[in-house]
Length: 153
Image (tube, rainbow, N blue to C red):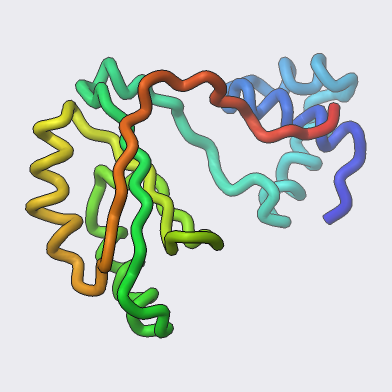
């Protein structure tokens, strides 16, 4: 789907506040609610809008530490990659998992209460996944930037 300037403006409004009313979105982009709604429906149907969510504060939920984990697997067979992905899907503390190029195979973003909670996660869940050759963990000290997707508006 080719996005025009109005589509990108609508996406920018929704990205900053997915609860914005059609009137508010229309006012921000210069459209009345009806054509605005039509554009939003088309963006949803095309898969540009995948869903509407709420951003939660990890600290308020007792999840004070974020850990970036680099994982190297023993094998790169389709079966190994599939099984690893299936196991990661069962671990709620793993909030992102990326298959990457470079020196390691996966980059995981993990949220935990503290270092003891992370140690528990390693022992009880991560290290029980077959096929992990090596992992390296880095605790996030401070997040310098967390931004919405660039839309060129």
